[in-house]
Length: 229
Image (cartoon, rainbow, N blue to C red; front, side, top):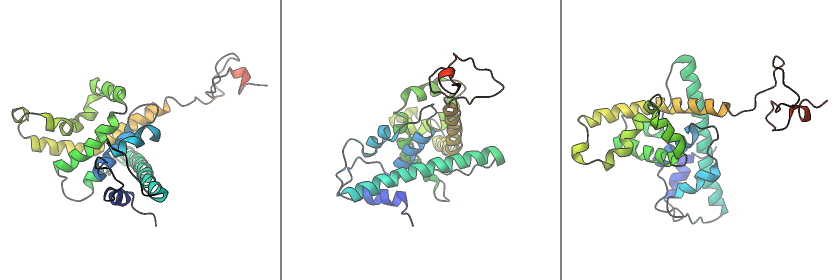
């Protein structure tokens, strides 16, 4: 039976190999969720996001076995998130059932704001890898509502006491409850944008000129690619 990726990560954090700046399990879950749902055509590749797992310091692994175990656990959790988010999105669209639960909702109790804030801290680090994508989303009147539930958990620590709104706890409870739905909305948007960059299949109902770009996306002229006699 495969070990729980979060248990492997927690064990790594307790070892001498882990830098003190490495992400907590909640941060890691938020970070990888942000990687999965970043709404842009090209996904963020592991080569771009792996290095940020450790924070400012570098891990000192004991041996190759530990390296493979830790990085394998991270990739397994990333793939599991992708699968679970996509499944929950499909269920939401088909049956109007919202069943996605980020790690801060792992229990039956209402999550603490500190737990949500730790998770969102990781999500923010993923956002920093695609600043232009997220800035456009936040500035667009039609889409900024999607990231609104995250914002209180981003900025609360930077506010002076007199700037904190009344009934902030109730508002943060509402925001935390909305985050799972917004994760699915972001994933839907990401899938739409990813699909927009895929090669258009050749359709017999559409006439393609021999000197036109080939619909397969090769970059060649049609006559030198799929239309070659």
